[in-house]
Image (cartoon, rainbow, N blue to C red):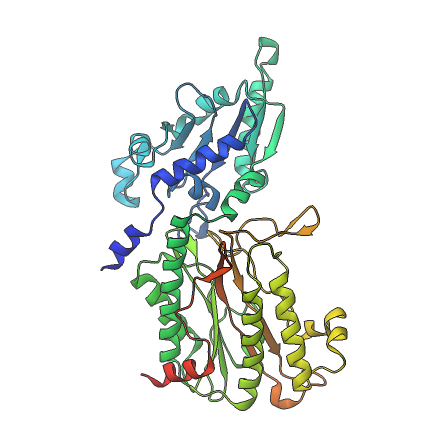
Length: 447
């Protein structure tokens, strides 16, 4: 099966996008309208643009990948509730920039009810807004588009004496839409599993390729090749290939260092596939064999990850996996003599934070740090089926750390997998890359 055919089989189809739009409109107040804009193009330097990536909310509701587009949802509109403004087809422009869908294609291929040229939006959209009591819109994400929305509303306000009825309230669209995005459908999980498989394969290839003397960016190149070769569009986030003490820098992305004999290599990398992210971290020895000290730290982190994953189950709350990881990591630091005192003191007073300074995970979906509230009404959110989260404990012992024996210094370990909450517990979406020490060493020995 080719990468292209696998991609086709694991895409979100137009019926699911239409279902999402219907569900959103069902939750909107009567006599309201929702406006969602596509992501703007961004200049990289002079006349060179960054590779275009659609706004996740817009993509979630439409599947439409072009810039200069606006989705409008108008519940109860007689001539169709879903309206898309997009670029008209232009053969001369397409010669330079590629195929454009156009309004007719938007209706035919994306299932919207009505579509207009985006160049006509100033003439048409105020008429759709007029008479609606509420506007659902995400203010503050695009200041230029914010200004245009206010211009449309103000053009209605200017005609109040002539009987025009402007909206009286703006409602944050993300409160409803982001809660929808938090719960993944079966189709979304299939896409995310494929993103996980591609990313796991890339991690395995990086382990096989690793050896002292390579540069970090050479392993990054292996990852990127495997991502794109199997149908992914891009890395889901800047790739971290951190050897030796570079692993103690949590967001290290320079990837310029050389792998040294005796160093660990920490790789945090995942692909984006059909709009969804994978997020995997593995730590392994550059020369293929863990030292005794590296094994000791690694086993603590692995035990912490396993303990945290076991807490991913319905009715547990968001923070319980983190609490489980913290307890295991803290006890491990005590066992190694890196910390002293009682387990209760280390946890309650936060002494472990010198070596584990981040959370154990985050929501995952279309964005690598995906949307969704972690607390509701001041309490940690209860886990429910369909939620996807990362589990990524770590220990980071930087060189020169005061009060820590030299043999532990410079060791950094993080292990991360992507986990979906199921009705009975959890399912690991990224199981295909080894994390047991014996399995890692065996893979690296099998060239």
